[in-house]
Length: 121
Image 1 (spheres, rainbow, N blue to C red):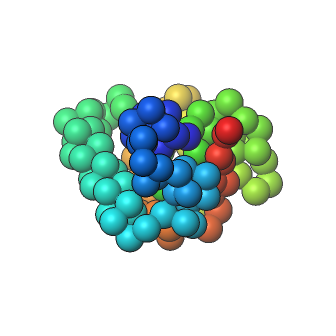
Image 2: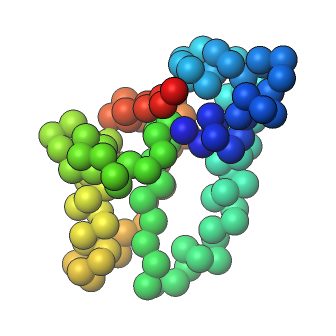
């Protein structure tokens, strides 16, 4: 969803270079994937200071899905995305209720086969 809304919306892509990638992430070209990995790396570098605090938690998966906490299928169901063996809801609960520190970062796309790559039109 971030690709559709922020990184490459149609208004910023008049020649349609990102069109196929926006609609089906499996159709992203190698340079597009490299660009997305660069965006990921930049984001991870930006949160380094934030992640040092014991009060803060992280659950950063490599799924092409925005607002995963709003959907039951990505938040807490039998086939929700996981990092390690935890779904988002359990990781957030562990962090929120101080059961465990949660600072998990997924491997880069496309390694996570638990993802629901959601495309909204």
